[in-house]
Amino acid sequence: MRERNEEPVLEVVNIHKAFGDRPILRGVSFQVYAGEMLGLIGPSGCGKSTLLKIICGLLEPDEGEVIKRSDDIGLVFQGSALLNSLSVRDNLAIALERKKYSRAKQDEVIREKLQLVGLRDFFDAFPTSLSGGQQKRTSFARAIVNDPRIILYDEPTTGLDPVMSTVIEDYMIELGQKLRPASIVVTHQYSTWSRTTDRVLLMHAGNIVWEGDPADGMTSDNPYMKQFAHATKEGPMLAGSV
Image (cartoon, rainbow, N blue to C red; front, top):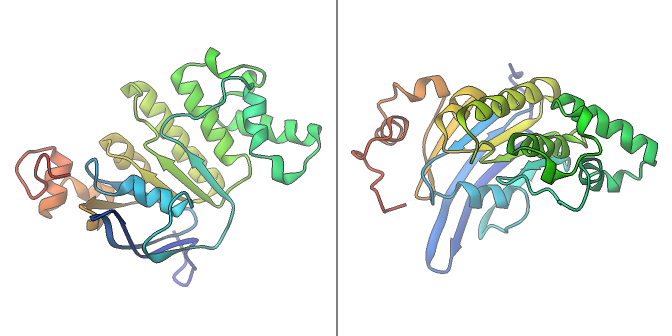
């Protein structure tokens, strides 16, 4: 539970973005606090991934700003984005380069983070020898190797079977409890946003159309949330319009 006067770690203020004459984001604003996991949900094409790219600096907004009270950011990509030519140890070491640690100190930190995600015995393994779930957990370890105050998850359970999705969601919850970062989870999978997040923002056509506790999502009378949560064709989010 955050204190009443606590300052947000991350603020998104009136973000607009268009590609050519196609508006993607239409004035999106929200805040994320330390220890909070915020879900950004919605149908494909609603602006979730574009917004995440703006937050992490890969895209510039046309209008508005992102205020980050920490430069320590970890990003978990939709694909694990590991370099197959490098060992697990060396994939994580890349993220530690700016720390100027000795080799021994790097190894200590890397082993600690691999322990957190249950992969301590895979220090010298190569990504091609890992299962999909192990690759995803390695990308988690890389994202947290610098003890970030902000973690961004881009569709973290995409392509995983239901059992492995649950495993990954459990690690997300555990990392949030241990590190207490301000986290944003971009996802459209019900199990992920319902299990891992503290608060959910539903996006449609570049706007936030519902905000609330994930437990309230299934019973909400908001027409957008009702349609999305129950995966029905009837509602304001028309098929083919997103």
